[in-house]
Image (cartoon, rainbow, N blue to C red; front, side, top):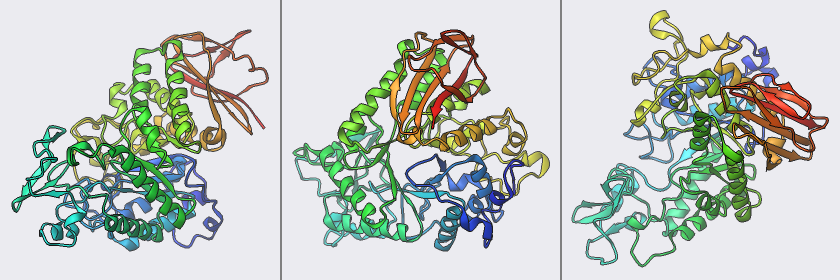
Length: 519
């Protein structure tokens, strides 16, 4: 088992059963802190079959605690015929390759001792064709026929030639047709059916009873896409928002402190609209903008910060209590370290920008060690690099279900742990700073006038004080105008320590620095 040398003995023991010291560990609010997006298959193997599993995650809780995350999001863990699990065979069980329900309950219990919440990926747009609900629905006279979207092919309002992502949506089976927006192996539920909604509530309550702290809702904005609806239906988005309001309301009635975040891969306006039903949605396109700004080495007129202010304003207009969920890249996007050609300063800078924004940031597993990956999706979800396994025998928890085409030169976690200047230790430092300052979760965001196109700058005001964030995107030292109310502010965090002139901060190349007045 890999241990961080700097980690306290109490934290090192957080994954161990019966450790008396850990009983007093404070559990963070599931709706704050920093989350870690974790693909079970690729993370850690406990039984030597090369496939990551839940017991493997338990064995690595010391690592997660050393990283400082307060929550983990498990990509789908249900029984499924696919490697990724988004086509669910059974919503009430765990994929046997990953373990058992008892293993999941133990994971939640051990995470609680470590102050880590567990949310699970919940695909409610579709199931798999092997799900017993869908199999029953294939009979025209089945009570579950209306659980899915079926047509006899004679309805003039159904376009059987509809296409999504370069494939046909409607699929013929037994003389009838069912919709599969993502592909024919993922049949779409009929979310207008009250029996389906009632069953979903049973599923959600079941997992909360097993210890889950909440959910990540997959494909949240695709429940009522036009391709799978009669042409007369024009209010698909409104129906979807109402659906999520009902589901979220149910979850909060069962568990008031639950955290829920929706995958709404769309414009800022659409994401905001969905927050009428969901407390949080992922901030899609933010990572793309951050990566572009770092690559371009400028954000003219503080454009990124001003765009963010607009996004927050739009969300607040729909839900004043909204929780933003920033991230750089996820399990569907090319890993950002590869996009920076593994330039360490650029990686740290991009991480700083999104980790020092309001809301609850999500770290995609492996980004904290600079893992590489690019399409197809399997190569974005490859085994976490714990050690130089092939050369040294390394960490027995190393998963091996697929070979990465991109990570042969990625410095393993065990090597980075001992290097103060590593990407891993920078993430630890940045996450620790963020989680110690509630302003990042509860503060008000305000762009600053940096008067320098090579710099990003914003402030976050809270009851605890004010934080000033500065980022030099360029390869040269840059002068940044101090905000008008900057007097008395002290350095709280830096990627590279800046210099100060009379009226300006002198930021070193590709660096982040945080000043503040915190009570």
